Amino acid sequence: MIYELSFEGHTLGYFPTEAEAVRRAGYLPKGHYTVREWAKDGEFMMFDPSINNEYEYTAK
Image (cartoon, rainbow, N blue to C red; front, side, top):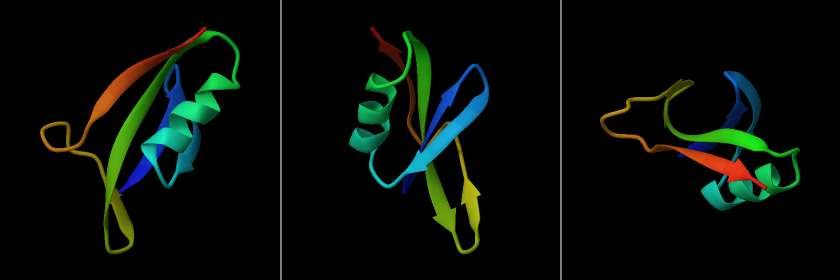
């Protein structure tokens, strides 16, 4: 799995763990961030909302 951190639809980065993505969001300006879990399938990354997690994180 790989984790994407985004803000208002813009990707801010990809991280090897969910904790790393949330930690990085803590250093960014206040706002609502999205963390998505992506699965690697060979050379491709796939996001399926029925399988992969997605949640909002609020940096204070």
